Amino acid sequence: LFFSSEEIIQTYKNMELAPGESLIKEFTYTFLTKGSVFLFAEIVYADDMDSTNNSLLLTRDVIEFQAFRNDIVVNEIMYAPNSPYPEWIEFYNRSNSAINIKEFAIADNRDTSTITKNDLLIKPQTYFVVSKDSIIFELYDIPSQVIIASFPSLNNSEDRIMLLDNYNRTIDSLVYHSSWGGTRGKSLERLSVNGPSSLQTN
Image 1 (cartoon, rainbow, N blue to C red):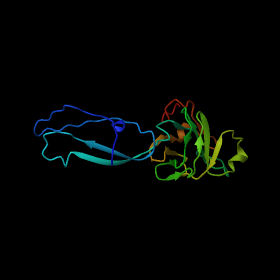
Image 2 (image 1 turned 135 degrees about the vertical axis):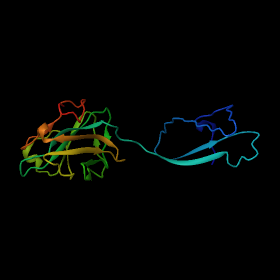
Image 3 (image 1 turned 30 degrees about the vertical axis):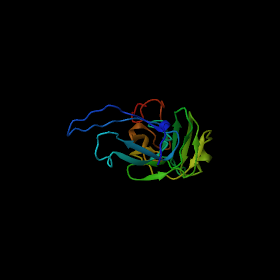
Image 4 (image 1 turned 90 degrees about the vertical axis):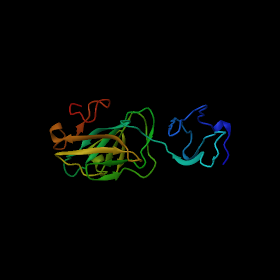
């Protein structure tokens, strides 16, 4: 492999180490493209009689995160619907960017279900609903995007809801209790998308 001067990330000069000492250098670098990249480190010391152990080549995968913590939040939960209507969860993209929720998942304390395996962009500052059944349209006139997908059954007494991204990182989570409200066919709705998910008063 050959590297040009334009590819140099960091150079350290005139460093000294006493016998038995070690040194760690850290750097931050932003890669502009995804995929596999090579990282090459080399020590140059003119008086070194063994230069065979003076370099290291690493291969790393550069990934792109679609969302970060609280970019998408749980906004409304229907955990105790009247029969025959389904459970559903409404989310809100509170970021300033469109987010691809491909391979995102909904989880509770025991199970995890992928929302969609296809590319699906959620526009910034918009809502979307994940419903277990399309019969939801018979009950509501829903202006936001609706995704029909299975997710873990929500307990009526209390349960945990987690939105996980495609790298299994938690984007939002909360534990609700029936004392918060949302029983007998009424949804549990968030008051402020900027307030904490886990706060009952929100």
